[in-house]
Amino acid sequence: MRNLGPIIALLVIGSGWGLTIPLTKIVVSTGHQALGLVFWDVFICTVVLGGLTYARGGRLELEARHIKLYLVVALVGTILPNAVSYNAAAHLPAGVMALIISMVPMFAFPIALMMGTDRFSARRMLGLAIGLAGVALLVGPEASLPERAMAAFIPLALIAPFFYGIEGNYVAKFGTEGLNPVGTLFGASFVAMVIMLPLALVTGQWVNPVPFGVPESALVTSSLIHAAVYSGYVWLVGRAGAVFAAQVSYLVTIFGVVWSMLLLKEAYSPYIWAALGLMLAGMFLVQPRNKEALA
Image 1 (spheres, rainbow, N blue to C red):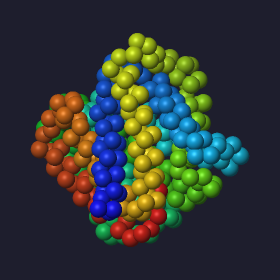
Image 2 (image 1 turned 90 degrees about the vertical axis):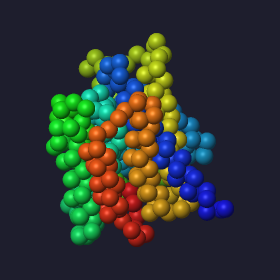
Image 3 (image 1 turned 180 degrees about the vertical axis):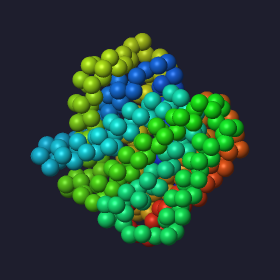
Image 4 (image 1 turned 60 degrees about the vertical axis):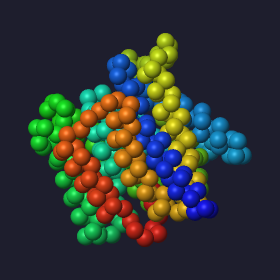
């Protein structure tokens, strides 16, 4: 029975993370602009993760080396991918966004090869090719998406997992300057909040949360879930190991599709289901099977 704990945690984390995908679709449903949404997302994460950090006796480290780390993680792990994701979510079905997020490990592998943090593997390269074949199924056949014009936004959506791949490899190569993952994300969220506040105001993309309706509730809920599941993921890595915890990526994609069907009443063509199968197979082949560290 003791071994059920990590399995249940994996399911809860995957389900929660997957739920944030259709919630994002709801957030952008009334035309809220991306930069304003990113600000509120990182503001909520800063409050939650900051509270968790200080409750555990930690603090926000502000040495130059820490600020550099926060800035990199804020840019490539939050600001840039979140901004493009909000824009893409306004045009693509949430289930398709769930499929695209599965490309993170497939982008991470070639980036790791270029950075010299991983070595070539025929099996993992095959996984990359299979994942790209899944993307081709989304873009190619006319019947794959509800509207043909949506295919133009697939490359935009792919930018987010590309940046996540960069972030993971950066952390894997250069480390976190002695900070734990929650402290790192707290600092990155704080820096992102400082950057995004003037950007949202200057560009006219400020989002006024009042009146507080369904989209605003979805934003708050999504941000709280994000902070909670990330903290849970960190706990799971420490409890069951990085390789076991990495299996959450399958669940995020699967639950993202299921939640989108339940909450948004989305229906998908056979091409999208085939793309889902290819992407899950690609993830299975790309992810490391041994006990090497995962970012």
